[in-house]
Image (cartoon, rainbow, N blue to C red; front, side, top):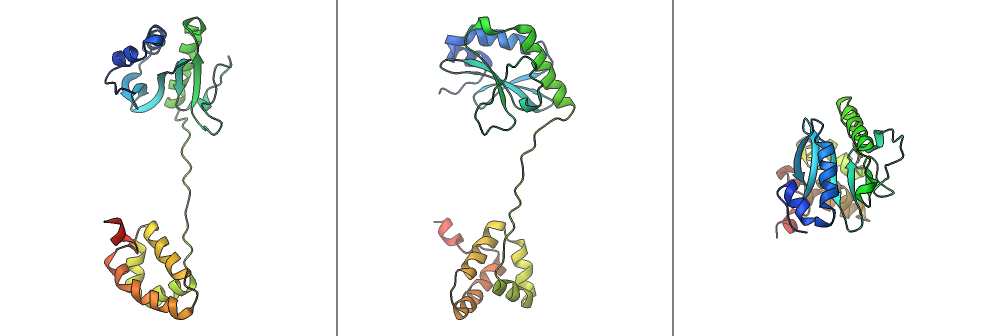
Length: 198
């Protein structure tokens, strides 16, 4: 799709729904939301926080609410974009006759109030703990300088080294690999860094 630099350009690109989008835009602009273009579509924010956006598609157009999960939806106007969607909710329309300005404005105002109250669905941060093989743990405990250097490595690099040691079948191979990685860890480089820079 053509990159747009303004809401007016977006309306031109989506001429089949431009009047309807303009109607929604005028409802939204009755509030104190700031209008901008993000992700190649009109987005409306409050104090830098994205509240909602406008979108036009082949057979429908509408508003998406970034934290729509917190809207009461008393008029049953919202739907999930996809089954796995957590926070985002859409208000879809097929024609301008489907738009009830007062209802749309009340949802927009509620979304703004929810943001002002701090209602935001925060992404769940997955804690990825790295299981160090016993041989690596013992080696690090007996080589303090290497242990400090290992802690400074990114989790990805730590994981690479852990898997490298753990994948060895024989104790002698594990011992050889530990000696091999020792200088690399001290330099702060990852096991596969030389291949990544090719």
